[in-house]
Structure formats: structure tokens, C-alpha cells
Length: 345
Image 1 (cartoon, rainbow, N blue to C red):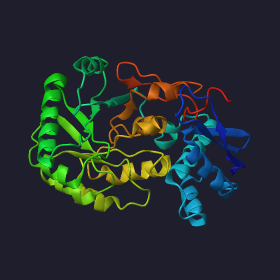
Image 2: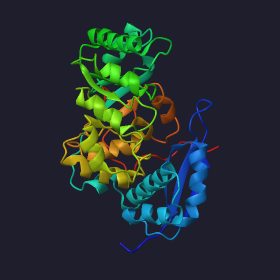
Image 3: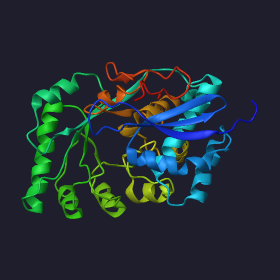
Image 4: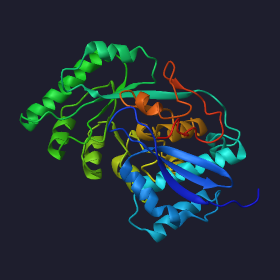
């Protein structure tokens, strides 16, 4: 193929289903075609607009060279903005050659529906969880489920820890199969230590990102106490993976494909952790590129997150929505990523 170049990068606002939703799509133009990624927030959109001129003239197929070029020009650039542009370029690449991005990542891959696990963090196990809601989600055929486990301040650390451990036991009795929880960054190091000293829950698949920051020392202590820990949503593109893996020994790596710097970086991370045997479960905020990552590397990336309370609204923005059935998402078979917006304002 004759060498092709990026001609223009822009952002396009798209009609939203509900106030507060992400509403901006990134468009990368080149070779007479347009690649898309979205939706992203208006803040990320502004960052994309600021760095867009930097990537004009970059070869379209040089995915490895895109991020270093942006970083060299703007060292403090938003990882999300870089990731959004990277994904839009992959969409454009797929459209130009008439192949799904998953086929570009893993030529000759086996085609199959993509497993998804479902999260419903608004339903918090540490609060008055509805057993009816739990049962309803469990009947939908997902690979497994993930629920909120937020700190409920007002009691001593010891009492908070006892309440959280009891909440997990109550949920396990209803769910009766392995499940994950996400503390959504609400725990303190003291609470994490107190929980680790009390927790013995064989049904817990993992505890995800309990701290408000990426505190590897605390996560290492949890893992050493036998708590299955998942980290990765806050993973930065330049983070030392060997240190993270050796220090924390996570049960799962829950990277956000766009937030970690884009699909190019997500593939690098996936290949880097392969030898350590740590599975990757892409975060649901960047579900569509996560679908392609699962489709390309199913042995390393077993399932993508489907955020049940938000994703159906987000899918209203796509020309071709990704609709799960019996816990599975369609195998990517159309050219590109499948992130073209449905309508423009």
C-alpha cells in the first residue's frame, strides 16, 4: 500500500441521551476516509483539539510512532486524548483496508462472540443491596458479575471492616458463584489493612482499586494477605509493568484501553503481562476497543467489562450499537472499530 498520512484531526459533538453523558467524538481524516472514536468528555475533546495539529502528516499505519511523537511535542499531554486519537487512527486503518481492527491486531484469529462480564456499581453491596436486582443480573448469562463495595464512613475502622466483610458474605450467599467487587477508590490504607485481616471469602474473584490513588504498597499488602487484587484502571502508559507485577502480584489487570494511551499501548501491555500469566480485563469505559482486544487475544484477555447502568445509553450514540446477548457481544466483523457516531448535532 502507498504510504498514507493523517490529514486532519477534529472533534465533533454528538447528540446525547441524558445530560452529563460524554458527547464528543474524535475524527481523524486521511486518504479520503475518516476514522472515529468516542464518546469522550468535552475536557478530553479540548485536549484532542490542542494536540491534533501535531499528528498531521504522521503516516497512518505507523501506530507505534504516534504516541512518541505526541509525547515529544507535548510531554504533559492527557493520556486519554492520546488514546482517543490512537483508537480513531486504528478505526481509519481498518476502514481503509476493509478489515476489523481485531484482524489487524491478530491476523488469522479465530472468530467468535466476545465474552463480557457485567458491572453494576450503583448497586453497592455495603448498602441495602436488592436481592431481586442481584438475581436479575445473574440470570442474564454474563461471564461473571462485579458490584460496588464502597466505604460507609461513620463507624470505626474496625467496624467498617467487619461490615464490609459481612456484606461480602451476604452477597456470596445470594450470588452463589464467583463475583468481583470495586471499592471505587473509597477505602483508606487503614481500612484496607483491617479488611485484609478479616477477609476469607472464596467466592471473591477480585477486589478492584480500593484506594483513591495507585498505592502499590497497599495493594501489595492486600495480595500478601491472600486478597485477590485487581488493578490497572489508573495505569499510565509509561508505568513500569515489571514493578507492578512483582510488587502487587495482581489477580487481574483491568486496564482502560483509551486511558492507558490507546489500543497500541494496550496491546503492548497485554503482550508484556502474558508471561506472568495475569489476565487482562478491559475496563468498560472504553468497551469497544476492549472488544477488539478480547477478539484478538482471547487467551490473554478473557472478557471485557459491560457497565450495565451506563453502556446502554452510550450505545445510543453509535451508528451500529454493540448489543450483548446472553452475556456475549458480537464478534467484530465490520471494517474498523465500530465507533462511528449515529447522528451529529
